[in-house]
Length: 263
Ligand SMILES: [Zn+2]
Ligand SMILES: [Zn+2]
Image (cartoon, rainbow, N blue to C red):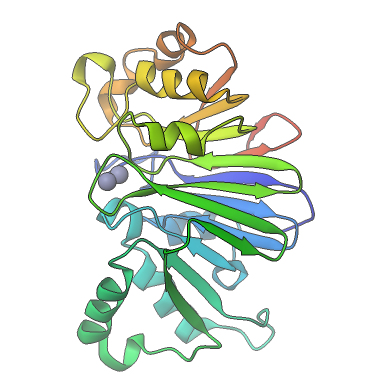
């Protein structure tokens, strides 16, 4: 972690098993703060692969409770409980998520018992209520998006930059507002236009959202196999005039620079 702003894609895939794409997880490094957006299956393995220490995460923001976005949460907490080093950074891991997070965590507590009990100085859970959340050095705005009943998208504002994350979502005004004038929007692009599914985006719909929101650069992620067979970049370019990238696991985007492939 350093003082620059960067995004590292730990998982750009879906529930569809793919040797090259882990389930959803994106690391957002802000000055002095490390944030994980979603923690789907395989995230811990990707973290190990890319040198991201489990105890280096300060916050997790969950978009919804589908397993491809949340199922390594229990694994991360189990790891922290057992492997936290004496020299690990002070301060708890703060896990934020939509309404239903407390119920989800209680279910894990019932299943795992003493293996899933944490002191407040270790882990804290918060359900989203206020739409605007102020943290030291950054702020977060969230809104409901079109997927499951609880699903949310996020807008992060830090160091004069705006980064938006759709989570899983269909086309909706809430997501356009979250992405308004963003420097970078990470938008799901699940299926090709001809296979579009309600509650998910296709290249043309994702690009329209970015265009209407006035986003500078979009990065697509959350790919089912069909969408990558249809050249999503050229489809999206018909609807969006800015930069478009397809994320791969391991890609790093510096907010002031380009994309680099370290994966
Ligand atoms: Zn998903
Ligand atoms: Zn989902």
